[in-house]
Structure formats: C-alpha cells, structure tokens
Length: 554
Image 1 (tube, rainbow, N blue to C red):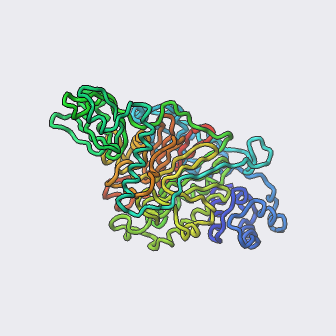
Image 2 (image 1 turned 135 degrees about the vertical axis):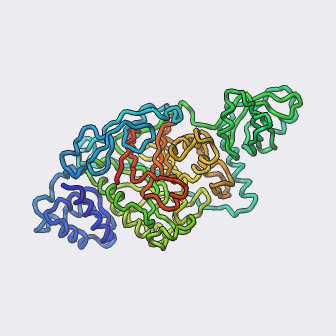
Image 3 (image 1 turned 30 degrees about the vertical axis):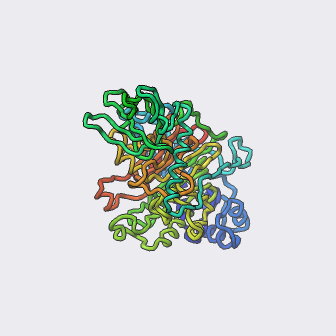
C-alpha cells in the first residue's frame, strides 16, 4: 500500500477534527473506497470521541456494504513508497520514503545510526571519529495492539511526569536569595562527600599554609596579570578567593566555569592566609558508575522539538511525512512522542518576526498545531513541554501551558508539563529541557568546548554542572521561586533538549544526550546570525537497549 494512502486518511480525519490509532488508519486505508469508510467512521463516532479506535472502525466496516474484503485484513508493511524495497538490509539514512543515503558518519552528524554502543565514551574525544553505519529499526510484522508474544493483548504502558510547577515567586529580593540558597544547598550536598568542606568564615581564621577544602558558588572569574585564574567562591557565610595557577594540568577547567555554578576545590592557603592555591577541582558531575535503566520490553520513543507552526518556514511536508511514517509497521514499536518545546512560532520573539509569520494570531497558531498533532497515531502517548517561542513566561522554569491552550491542544490528550520536566517512560528517565541555556554555554565557553555544530558538547557541560541553566543574568532568564527547579537532583538516563535547531547526540557517563533539530527551514533571522538549521530529523530511542536511530523526513 503506498505511503500516501494512510497519510491522506490521517489528514482527512484531522480535517474533521478527529485523530485515530494506527490500526484504525490502516483499516480505513485498506478499504476499496477509503473516502466512504472515513465518512462512515466520522458520522457514527460518539459525540465525545476525539480518537477513533480500531474497534470502532471494524464495527462500521462490518455493517458497511461497500467496505470490500479488507475489514479483517492484517495490516500490511507500509514503510516504503516502493513496497518490497523497504526491506533493504542496510539503509544508512532514512528519508521516510524508502530512499537511502549510505555514508559513514561521525558522532552527532545528521544521519541515521544505531550507535552509542560505547556508552562510556566522552563526546569531546569522539570528535572526528566515525561510527559504522547500521540498519534502521527492523520493521515489525506484528499488528498494533499485540505484545511480542503475539498473544493479542496490549502490553501495559508506564509513564509518569514530574517537574510541573505552580509559580510562587513575587520577584522580591528574598525570592532571589531563596532560589540561589536552595541551589547551593542541593549541589553542595552532592559535593560534600568529596572534600572536607570548611565554611569561608572558618577558612579566614585558619593558619596560613594549611590545607583546606571549600564548596562554593562561583561569584566571579578573572585572570591575573600573570595569566593565572582567580575564582571567587561564595558560600552561606561569605566569599573567598581561590587561585588556579596556569601551569597546573587542570587549569583548563577554569575555562569552563560559569558564574553561579557550584563547585568544590581543595588546596593550600597562602603564607598570608588570604588566598587558597587550588590543587583539585570537583564538579557535581554524573557519577562514572551510573548505570541507566532500560525498559522490560521492545518499545521505542520519538524525541523531537521546535516544530514552529505559524512560521512561513514551517515544514508541513516533513511533519506529515513523519506522522505518516508513525502509522506504518516499521514504526509499530514507537509508542511515545516527547516534544521538547516550541510547538508554535509565537509572536514578537525576535526583531522582524512579524514579517516571517504565516499565522499572525497566537491562538490560531496553536489551533493549527493541534490539527497537525492529530496526524500522529491516536494511540501514542504524547508529552509536551514549552519553549521560548511558546505562550508562557520566558523565565525558567517555565510553567506548563495554561488551561486555554491545553483546551486547544486537547485532541491528543497529551501530557503537558513544565520546562524542564523529568518523564519516566517504562522505567527510563528522560530529562526534557527546551535548551535556552545552550546559547549561554556556547557563548561563554571556548569553541573547542561548545559550539552550535555540536550541541551535545554544551549538554555535556550542563550534565557536569548538574544544572540546566547555571548562569544568571545573561541569555537565560531565571525566575525567583521558593526552590531551584533547574538543579539535576537525580541522574537522568536520557537528556533531551532542542532550541538550537541543530541535531546532536552522544553519551556522557552513560547518559544519552539528544538535541533533536527542528521542523522549520532557515528564516531570515537565522541567516542574519549564520545559523543553518537541521530540518526534519526524528531521533528514535529503543527504550529496551537505549540504541538510537536518527530518521530524516524531508
């Protein structure tokens, strides 16, 4: 069956305000007169139905004289426009239409790979190395709704979302003090087992030449006339200057520091006791012993972001190709869709944006996004968090969409949470963060440490700092709340970001990092800042093995 047939079924149902699970779409597409079958399904749907089920479609087909002989047929493999060619044993790149682009790829390159086998590898050392090309996820021959044993019963899904907040900050000075004190206490708690911490007021009274350890928040970083690094660390009792000598083998660590992050140092007090010569740096970091959790069954999740409906450059063709692929047998195991922000283009986000809008009303943008979301199989679990283009506050953490926007996007019954949030899918924890602070990290750190071409390097630094937006007062707005919701208190199994419109992936201390590109072609504003976006890539994670496959739909 041609790929366009289920795609047209999905689009026709969406035009009538309905979504459908993938079995229902397959049944309708297999009819001799799909249009008549769709009309019957829509006409007979209960008033409160938003998602048409396979059972409902079977029921109307059983009573429809023009239904043909296909009402009880097994779903066919629809993963390719060319039919049997979808069984190609070594497609290195999937374009959603059965074509391939075989090539060797480096880590983070925008092509398909099931890499990340060396789960302890460091992204920085992997730059320029190549991974073997490998096949796409094998097409499943089982109909939707059956488990791997073929028993005909659906496996029980498991998904929980944590991190949603109700904003309590008033913007008063005390609120800012509260959020930074909470940050310090949380991250200092992760560091206390590594150094013999002494409060700064105690260190000030210690004997010169003594060994000392200090956990502090970086309040200032500067170089001396001799090229050494002077780092001011602040705890709850005061501040103390720490000197990193330029000839020490860890001196490069000072280049990666951001103000307001929390670190620990050990060293020796100067002869006058007024400065600490640093011998060792400690970051909160991800333990090297971290072992990620995995699902107990074969199940996959698609991790995407930055759809930007409402922009003149929104790639509706790529999105529809992706949604159509989700209805095929090849995507049968993709049961979860996690969207990390920027559902719409928004209004007034950057200078001159109004000239690049296809839809100028923000609510109309969300209405249109909801229609595109209906193209996704109705039996998929969807989780969404906002981004900086969405109609929520810009300061992070960003509360979830308000009730009015939730009502507009209710057709898929998506789970909606704050930015950031942790989603636990079949036992696998996914830290979803839109990623505005990636701009900050890339701007502040040397190019070899972080760049837009390799967003996973910037993500690695956030994991190391155990905070998604450590620096205050720059590109990233931080809201004063009773506690700091941006600290990574628990180690995620997957760290999923977006925002920079570039595809990047890697592994750091066994945490899978994915920055998931976008669904918007280059805008005039992006041209002005020399950003060439990666468009239409869909990272697919096998939650049982944490293997990653990248598919492109353009």
